[in-house]
Image (cartoon, rainbow, N blue to C red; front, side, top):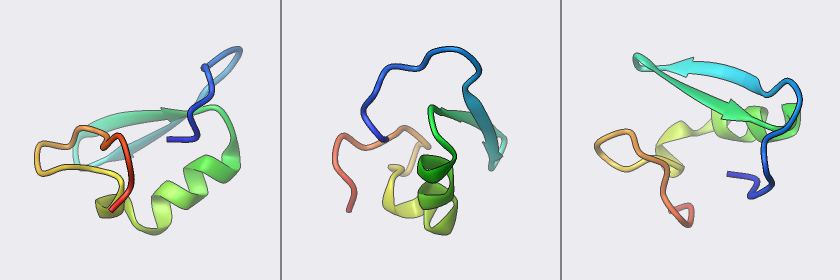
Length: 50
């Protein structure tokens, strides 16, 4: 979602039975505030937020 390569120790978040990984805590917090903005109906990450 933050569009940078994952390196080192990515931050993981479980949401509705799936795990999503983030490179920075700020990206995780943005996603956690409104996950439906970033995901399609199947739980895949959208190329652009809604």
